[in-house]
Length: 423
Image 1 (cartoon, rainbow, N blue to C red):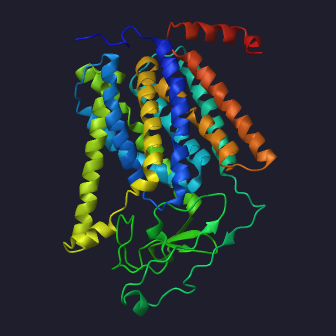
Image 2 (cartoon, one colour; image 1 turned 90 degrees about the vertical axis):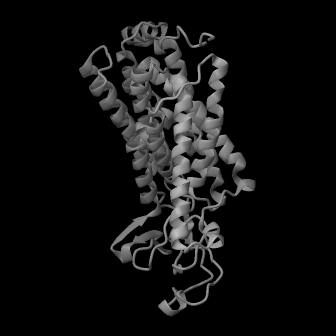
Image 3 (cartoon, rainbow, N blue to C red; image 1 turned 45 degrees about the horizontal axis):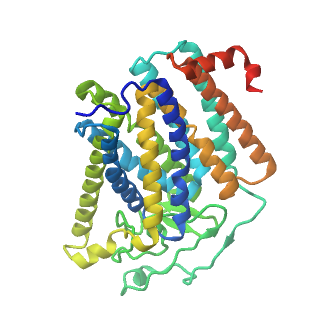
């Protein structure tokens, strides 16, 4: 068997991989965000990402890695696929800067708990490491806060729906009518991805693209056009689109952010390195993605009483002609980031390596500031950049606390001892 090209790689590989991870993870949401003109379900975009991740995972063969399977790959898929779906939802409804900022802050906490406390990864000083994490979290929270600040200077405008009044019960259950677009608030945030769940007066017997579940009138989510709010459970709960996007980002951070924890157990049980685990990760994710499709088809089959034509109509559509470029780009960027994250975790540990990768927020925030114009106003942008500087300081302090002997570590020692070198 050929020797892996990564054999003998040390901390320097970990830091290089972490930087590459930051760039790739911070940018993979760009094609997701730009595909908003198509009313597509988050599960569709995640399916694109999963398929690309699976196909590209076998490129590790060219690095001399042996293809081996670990059941821990399924565990990674269980964390990643549902969590990433929620993350896509968050990007599409709360914006890149706030969504990535929210889940990055949560991932830093989980990485610290698992890496430093659970896995007992070595650090120079435990208490200083805690302070470094605290500085990083303060910076990330500040970035998320100022990215999320609403732009009150521009009042929202509404596009009137072709159907001005909500239908009566008799109208709802009458013969099917052509689907009409929902009322959309025109703001700096993009429309919701699962549009049918917001459709006013939706006929429960009429299927639409992207439904995950059919709901009756009392439990379905509706949109009140004037306030751009989603009403759940017959008015007992109301959330804005922005709030539902933040919830999606929280789910991605708390659940999806655990997707590399199984890597530690795969290394313990099967001796798999980060690069060697990539095939198991991608294959396990494909299995989980396929199982979710089977469950979704089975649910719709039950709802439509075995009418296959109605089942096909109810399932979310791939819109291949419109989305293949965005899906391919997002999948390639995520695959590159995921591979780099695995190397960062392998060489730097979960606590330091994966936490460093959350500097992706800086990259995604720059996209949000300069390209998508999600953050507006000089004062707000200035505060965001100050928060970003705090986050970078936290990353530098965290990197210094990593126990290693690489050239990068010695450079960090020089910087910490002579901070004037930064200038």
